[in-house]
Amino acid sequence: FNGATSLGTVTADNSGNFSKDVDLSANTTHNITAKATDTAGNTSDASAVLAITVDTVAPTMTTNTTGQIASSSDLVA
Image 1: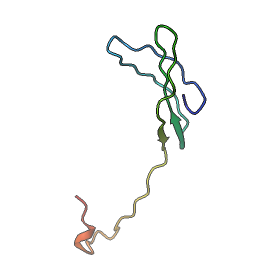
Image 2: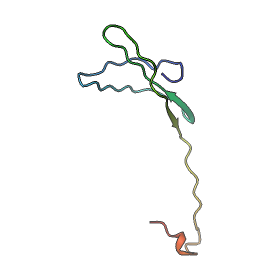
Image 3: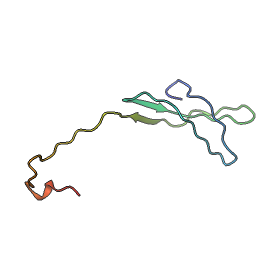
Image 4: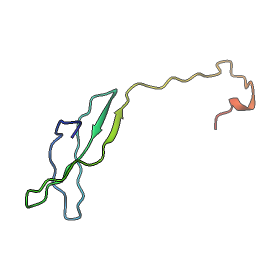
């Protein structure tokens, strides 16, 4: 689930592993939860929320454009 919206269903393998590809809108925080349903049809409560932010905005960076090292703290490894 993304909030109250279902993102679909998946079936776990024999080891209990599962995965699901989903499309999430950019530059938004998504609150993802999961529920499990057993073979008898019993559904669990929602899991703890996993907050995911899809960030497509490139970070800004300030550089020393003179090419001169002003101090040792200007060095980047």
